[in-house]
Image 1 (cartoon, helix red, strand yellow):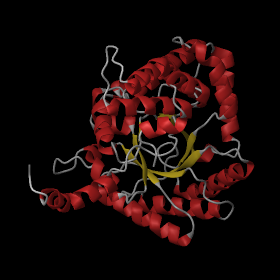
Image 2: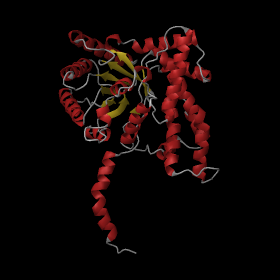
Image 3: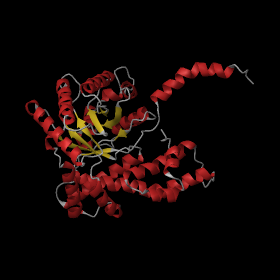
Image 4: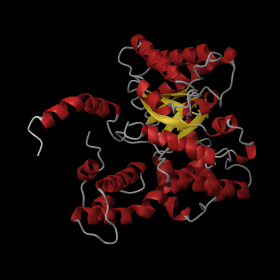
Length: 401
């Protein structure tokens, strides 16, 4: 056996490494992650937008239901969700969904911020909400800074910053842009004491995935954010177009999209930064056949993302909400009994064809908790199936922090 001085020497050698790893990789995301982000062009956002989305989603169900692809069993649960919380996360869009209109943008910024303040006061704002500014590239930098500054000034004159407020920074191409966003947030916080700003990085350029020296830049971007990064959002169409993928084949299930998202997933693992999948531009509008075809596609894509570990995705139209929630509920309800059985077997050290590792137990517990957060299952169901109270499940999932 080595002498007693070995372990202290190893501790001294690895102390800095231990501290850096704890700082960079604190563990899974803390708190609830929304199942979607609904993008609304800034000039169309009002204090009634969430209520309007609820009405439009329910009207689509009434006109074109039942839900397709075996999801009809989820309809009662979907309707209850739409009545209670039709939009979990909403982004007021001043970028691609809004366009370039410098003469009018200030007015739309003030109107949108005022509308959000009214929704916050009325208690009707989503749990997660924010805005997407333009990029920090040279051509749009001044507009991006002005829009964010004016939006915050208007909003914070009326209400406190909502707890789930996020700023989406699109078309990120370099670590320096992330550092610049950190500096911008710090400057705005100095103007508004008490406000704490977090932002999402929209990964929709090849330069973000692979830098000029051949290094993947997503992980350095996360670590350059100073703890402000609240998510990585994949941009389906900008990324595909930049790679030269023909328009008819641009999709969040294209192999190029899968590669980019796998890079995001690996870079974010353990950092506490969630990954959000992109959108489909095939909207459920038109006649019954067109709506149902779009629903089938959307439901399949949502399920596909969930199976690959992307627990959040973009929605672009209120009529996508029924299939977003139905596919999400189905994903968790389909697997909750098997996940609970495996977790019981793991805890009982009982082998029934599977020998699960502690990491798998964390994943099983996390799956059940995500289902609860998503509204797919109830707390009583999880306790009955797993035999575990929620604090025990959270501890197993590594969410005790």
